[in-house]
Length: 126
Image 1: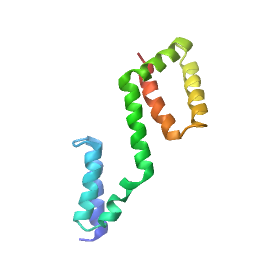
Image 2: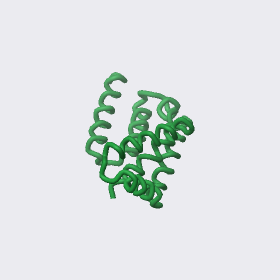
Image 3: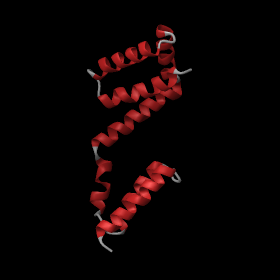
Image 4: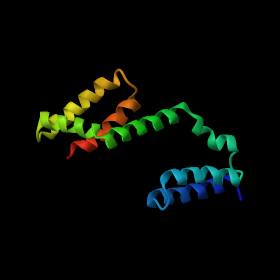
């Protein structure tokens, strides 16, 4: 079977697993890399080269920080402070969050800002 056909079959199966979430998304992603190597569609180095990227490590670290903000309640505190200031005005809340995130992204990494504000916005609703 041609390498392109094998790659397309693996891609379709991966899309089905991602859409149905039968397995966790990370497990499916690593399984795709392993399947591509085992079928000799790509080399081991090519299949796993993305894991050594500094950007992947940065995003992983920032997601840990964002999750920590959510779990420790800091995101909830920030969200509550925003709600106290704006009340029930959704447009004002959006403007405050966007302007704060915009100012922060001028000094911090965009990934860091995004990782901080996802849990803040999730914590704002309570």
